Each structure stands twice: as structure tokens, then as C-alpha cells.
Image (tube, rainbow, N blue to C red; front, side, top):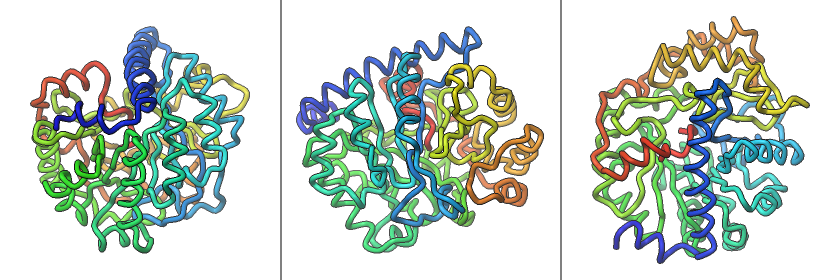
Length: 393
């Protein structure tokens, strides 16, 4: 059964309609409007990634949220404002992150109120019950992206929990059984690389009814960065070749947010394609760069982006310095740049600049050679609609 046939047969009809209209048609239109804005010198991202809470029920290696002196939960009024002002710019796609966003009590009210938008729910899956999956089906405008970080042994170590693998697989099955457009994400590192490359892993997801598999590279960050898990340049190249080949071998969409259609590395935050707003309302370049000069207040978002010298200068500097991830390529440079711009440490740990200054350099996706997409459809989608869906990575 081909990928499109699987999607049509397995997805709830209302969910399928929202997928096509809210994500597909509006998404293409949103990208065009974003490109037009950038040409006019009016920066406003095509996608917003929003952390609605710092609360989480796990404690993952490399998590940028853990270890805060105080956990924040976004005011629902602020969240509503972010979504509303973004839709006014013609962008209707949002990534919802945490912590664990299913711990955010107003979440489903937000999905229902903004039924004309489309939301990607980044979740560890352990809180997804059949009842939660049914609520998501009724909303119809949400795609759960469930993190699957390893097998029965590795998952507990990576995620700092117990019986995580079984609970995650059950969440996947609850979602696909409900007819949701379901994704699985894997943050590829040394401890799960073998599983990530395994044909059995992908076939199992296909059998479960998963619609898309999102590969992103482990980025050491947070209280427990675990630098030893970072991939080498050779391993990143192996992963990239695997993804390019897998796109034409399996009836499942293979997603990444790191390379363009020609195989060149990219940083969506450096292009202004997407930015992150954390649970305290700070506007960050991306989730793992927890340094900001701008915080939501009475100023409209469009003015905030237009006035932010920090974001403007960072976009320019990153585009000149690297096509990989600056957090991995040169963390000390990032710390110096941030000090020059008198940033606020938004990590909640009060030591982010010191950590970056002392952090080792590790390989990033910019370390891999350019390997163009083989599939016409993936080349077309990446070139015209940025199939990676944003910059969480």
C-alpha cells in the first residue's frame, strides 16, 4: 500500500480535511507570504514554536527545560494572542512544545478555539490514553508527534523514566487507532543510531499506521547535555544518506528540518523561517538557544520582530558563519555574541552563558557533505513548502 493510499484509508475524514486545508493549502500560502515579507524587509516567521509549559513527567538527557529554578506555564491569554497575531500574518501552523504540553490544562480549549489553525503536538506520549486520542480526533486540527528515543533499555536511560518504550508504543497505537495523522520523532544519537537506521524500525512504524517519521539530530543542551551522545560527522553523513534512500523505499513520509532540496545544511532560525516563544513569553531564536532580548508585552509581535536588533543581527551572523547548528559548531562564539547584545538568560538555570563558553564543539548537520534529494516530490516540497515543517529539529 502506497503512502498516499495509507493516509487516505487510515486517517479520520475530518482530520484528513483539516490536514489538507489547514496545513496543506494554508501552509503553502503562509510560506509565500513569509517570503514576500522577507523581501520587503518585514521579518515575521512562517512558523511559531511555542512552549506552553516547563512541566514534564520525564527527565531526558539533553533536555533544555529541566533544572529551572522556577517552572513557567504560559498565560492562556498570551497564547491566544500569539496565535491570533500569527494568523493575521497569514500563518496557521504552530508547533506546541513543553516540557510535556499535555500537562497544560487549557490545551484542548486552544485547539478548539483556533479550529482554522493546525498544531503539531510534540509529546513524549506517556500521557496519551484512548480518551486523549479521541479528544484530539474531535479537534481534528492536531498531529501528535510522539518521541520514540530507543528500545526497551535505551528509552528509559534517554528519557529518565520507567517502562517508557511500552508506554510510548501504546500512545502511538491509541493515536493511529483513533484515525489521527500521527508522527513519530527520534532524536538520533549514539545510543539509538542503530535503531534509527534499522529497516525493522521503520516497518514497525508502518505496521502501526504511523504517517510520518521525523529524524532530528541530538543537540546537547540543558542541565544534562550528555555531550558523549552527539553524533560524529561520519555518523551524520550515514544518517543523511539513510533518509534520502528511505524516502523512496518505505510508504511513510520521512521528515527532516536540517537540509534543503539540494542537500545543503540549513538553520531555519537563521533564515527567520521560525522562532520559538518559551513558556515565560521570551522570544528565542529556537528552543535550544535560550538567550533573548525580547519578551512579549503590549508590543505587537510584528513590531517586536521588526525592532529586534538581536534577532536581526543573529540571523545575519549565522547565515555568514555556518549552515549547521551554532550551538554545536561554535557554542563559545554564541556566548560572546549574546553578551555583546546584553541578552537575558532564558534557560531558568542562570548559567547558560557560562555553559556555552565551556561547551565542547561537536559535529552538526553542517558537517555532512551535500547529498541532494533523490525523490522528485521531496525536492519539490522542500524547495517550495519547506517540508521539514519548521525548526524544532
